[in-house]
Image (cartoon, rainbow, N blue to C red; front, side, top):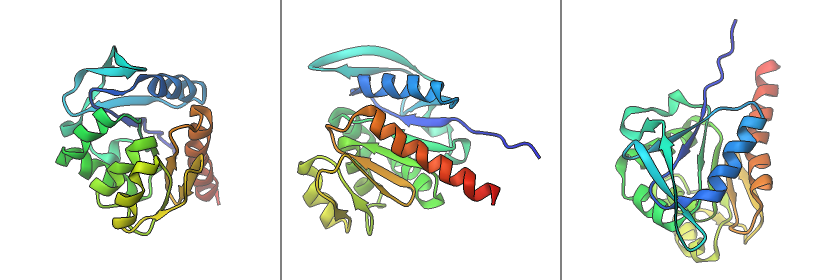
Length: 185
């Protein structure tokens, strides 16, 4: 039997944190994983770099044309601009919810943790993120674990803003390793 490894979705809208994205893309490739950028509009999506607009990146997939079943995991980079757009998009909310509900690995970076609230999947989860998200997460039924570097709760990894991209990605990829061990048993 052949085990097909699906790509990892990176969900982003205009204004996503460009450095986080490029760090993850390089590290995923080095780990032998394929990433595909999914955006609400497809085509090009512009990043945010430090204090201004950054580069344009090719988005391989249009959000309305894909399902979570097409991917093995989901990464949502940080940046309020991108996450505000995604939170308002019903396709984005359903996409995120499907990953969480089916147990596929999810990494919500920094303020992307707000999308767990918008997607109605924050309840009963241990999470971290920016301090300004604490009230909304607690109101949604999540357990705030302070500003830890990373918090893993089942298939969902949340990270603080100042966590290194390497630490974030290691926590996310560890979910795949535990999955592969379970499948082998």
